[in-house]
Every structure is written in structure tokens, then in C-alpha cells.
Length: 259
Ligand SMILES: NC(=O)c1ccc[n+]([C@@H]2O[C@H](COP(=O)([O-])OP(=O)(O)OC[C@H]3O[C@@H](n4cnc5c(N)ncnc54)[C@H](O)[C@@H]3O)[C@@H](O)[C@H]2O)c1
Image 1 (spheres, rainbow, N blue to C red):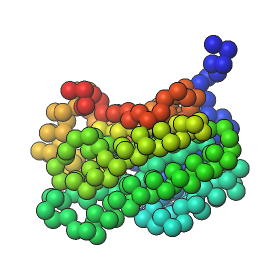
Image 2: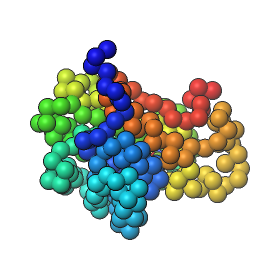
Image 3: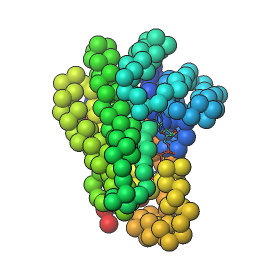
């Protein structure tokens, strides 16, 4: 057991890139990573919130936290995110593909434009950003961690979010496929599949008492998740504590999928 680190969750000296980290679950995970010792590059389209989050995280943790405003619908310049990370920090160890969008509409009303937008942000950007990150991790020669955000809809049907479900089914498969291809480079690829968390993404659920009641009745723990609930899980997947774990999708759902 001599190769077991004293603190297997310690991320001191590591650099993480977290997309969609201005708010919501992304900012909760960024806080967890910074508290565990990682420096951070935050990426989002919401400039003001992003600057606020970066400043709050660096002040509260003492870590170096930088940010880049970037629209992940644009996949043509994803390499710039990794190269900025390398310019500023000298390396990249952990990628968290967290940013996502949804369209809440019946299947029969979805347009091709809406379909393409959701797929570009939720599936295409994680695919090609992972490719850029893996290129850097392979060149560093010390392995790495890629963490994707899946969903209950990766596995089950949910009313009114069929396109989102298609994109998150893709994230589930992406996680498995990359885990197999990148394992020989020591890069672990796993996903977190949140149940229902209170964020901007799910605000329509919380505003509709009937829908809210239906959702809450499905959660054995009897409460929705909060961004802080994802912090420990992402630190586990980002750290050496999970070095032999790859291709797993962890349902972080208060017991929903177990019931
Ligand atoms: N909230 C939930 O209940 C829930 C459930 C299952 C899965 N998830 C997943 O967890 C992750 C985080 O969700 P959340 O609830 O915190 O969402 P959120 O909407 O609160 O946050 C998403 C962040 O991504 C950013 N973003 C959106 N489009 C972008 C783009 N084109 N380019 C760059 N940034 C962009 C937003 O500005 C926002 O800061 C997502 O992948 C989501 O699919 C959330």
C-alpha cells in the first residue's frame, strides 16, 4: 500500500478547465476542485457572472482562478481554450464538460434549428473539447481526468425534453467510448448524471407546483440536489482516489434511479 497517497483527494499542483462554470452545478464543482487545491480556468458565455464567480473562488480558496468568455456553440476554436490554459498555467490535468442548454417543448414542436443548437453545445462541444484536452494530456505524459455531465435522460425518458435526452444519451456513449480509447494513456473518463438540482436550467420545474410535486415524489431522499452536492463527486473523479475507475456514469440523484 506504499503507493497510496496520504490524501488521495488532494489536487495541489493540478489545473482544471470547467465549462459552464459561471453559475449552477458548474460553479459548485469549481469550488470543490479549488478547495481540493486545483487551479482553475472557468469557461462560460455569461461574462459578468463568470467574472464574479472567478473572483469569489480565488478569494475564498487562495487558488489561481482565470476565466475565458466563450460560446461553446462555436466548435471551431475550442483549441484556444486549452492553449490559454497551457499558456497561463503550463498544463491541463482535469477537464469538466459541464455547460449545457435545453429546450422544453413537446417532441412534435421541436425545430431542426433547436435540435442542432442543443446538440452543438451538449454533445459536439464536449466531444471536440475532450479531443483537444486529451491531446495536451497525452503530450504531458501523466494521464488526466475527463468528467462529463450526463443526466437521468441519458437513461430514461422525461416529458418535454426529448432533444436534451438525445444530447445526454450521446454524453453517456461518449463517456464509454473515450474511456476505452484513452485508457492506455492513463486518462480516466467518467460522468456524473445529476437527478434534479435547483439551478437556472430546471427553474420551470420549481415554478410549477404540480410538476415539482411529481419530481419530488420520485426522489427517495426527499430533496432536490444543490450545486454543493456535486462538489465532492467531482473531486473524487478528478483525483487519484479514482485512478482505477473509468467509463462509469455516477447517478447523483438522491436515489431516483435506485427506486
Ligand atoms: N440541474 C439539473 O437538475 C441537472 C440535471 C441533469 C443534468 N444536469 C447537467 O448538469 C450540468 C450543469 O447544469 P446546471 O443545472 O448547473 O445548468 P445551468 O443552466 O444552471 O448552468 C449551465 C451553465 O452553462 C453555461 N452555458 C450555456 N450555454 C453555453 C454556451 N453555449 N457556451 C458556454 N457556456 C454555456 C450557462 O451560461 C450556465 O452558466 C449540465 O450539463 C446539465 O445538463 C443538470
